[in-house]
Image 1 (cartoon, rainbow, N blue to C red):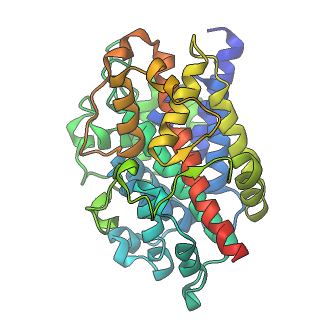
Image 2: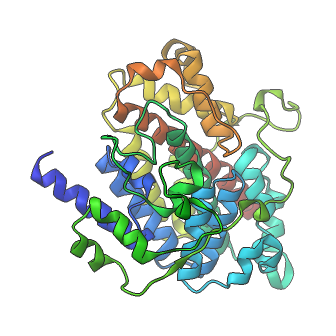
Length: 399
């Protein structure tokens, strides 16, 4: 790797340190696509840390709620730590019932967007915006929806990479040496973590994390970006943030035709409708999301560029979104059946309790291409959830 590229990657990792308190395993995976990683980190930092209608503790609590729907310990633990860092009430981490009623009102739309986004309706938006003293403002709701969609989609990436036995796992280094360890790696099966650190009830301090990161960065440089005082990172059980645990993904093709019509992009698209609405109600986020979506679709990873569109449109198809100008026969021509099963599993039901089988066709892809597939899954899912939510908000506004 040339020096300029090394410097760019170091800068990206420093951004991750500032944003999340560690160079997490997700950023390490995305590092094979620096242009996308930069866009991802910029967007994530904006929605979680920069100016916006929601207070910082609310943002991380919403992220916890979103990650919990997929039993994603990795993200639940990470945002629990961030929640405490920004002054969140530790009592809220006892479970959803301990949170303010305004946050509990998000539970239904969180559940629907996570598992069956086509159920998102104007009535859900109305309930949130007209709940008396506990009601949400339109701007607050839009930011909340963006955070929910972001974290649901990120769950797909986390589990997609973690279950890929042929890629470098999130918890192992490529040369077989002890891994560069993020404390949250233990949440999703990092068997190389010392037992004292892997126990969920254990509290891990930043000083210990700092020591473990010495293999990746110059220690003095790392310490420059970390607070000197010790800070406790606590572990939280995701199940205490879940209601109606039986609610999960169901085949869109098996729904009742009269109730849930196919979402046609020609009628409501990101470019013509979603972008302008979200950017108007939540300043600048439309541009950041648009840049992120474009970054992943323009990555030059595949020998056949049509494969990217096939993956994207297939994910949207299983989530009820159709493109009238696309020949869906290409999906079967370009994607092997086992790859389609993998993509559908990661996109629709990423879950710590389920392990999708790594496709045999994985072997013909380079590591960067495998990661690109998981990035496409994440971004296609993100856009699908946003389209459903923003369409419902639009219907509420014009009703």
